[in-house]
Image (tube, rainbow, N blue to C red; front, side, top):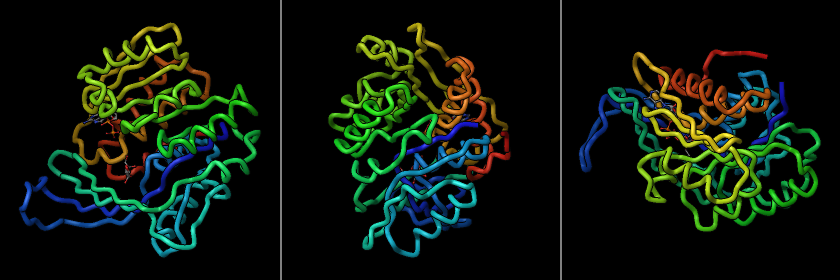
Length: 291
Ligand code: ADP
Ligand code: FRU
């Protein structure tokens, strides 16, 4: 069991379950609606907690009723909230998700105006308590300041960064990471339609990090410490019903395996199994309580 800190978002997800995804300007009725916690960093923590790790979240919340939906679920998974910064005013970031029953696709409209976590809040966290720190690649330059502090005080503390959306200057964060977790969106933004080619390009950027790049039902690629490009196919799922958070589950699977000392090949295989399993069920309760 490892002690894992994740810095990033928790959201309120309002999920409308529809039979098939509507086209623009259509009116459809949802079969059901669900309001639950989401957000990449906390999604990954919820999985890591079920895999037996001791988890803590650092992020912001607003003092408003929807925050309770978030904190009550995180508490249910024994996630430490002592580093959370709660703002007196504002609204928690909210995602309006349309989940198609026929394909399992999730279409997200996200809105946030809540201020992000600040490096001054991060400065209060005792990093000696952790075996791994995971960051969402967002909130520049504050995350850069957090990474600088971490590298100064704990140069050997393993650190992963999720690089999901292209953001100006995000490349400045890469040198701090032991593991970089890229999305299809990010690779496409750089003109790549092939994750292996994208990682080959990344391997020439003079970084020492291991890397992954997920590609939905096509599986994922990795770049290991020896500079080799690896590929794992997506795990076969009988019926894909819910892909919301698949990437976050994949990242949790990678962290779980790497923090246990396994190599990237093994970690990719296990991450793919977990993410595939998640796509076959609704939500993130994967039913794998391991210690
Ligand atoms: P995100 O949730 O960030 O959009 P992806 O869609 O790239 O992430 O999916 C992340 C991982 O989840 C993939 O690499 C794969 O392992 C798994 N996955 C996604 N879609 C499927 C699917 N249809 N069947 C099986 N596994 C899937
Ligand atoms: C899934 C997710 C949702 C959230 C959205 C935020 O990866 O974390 O739970 O609403 O992405 O971008």
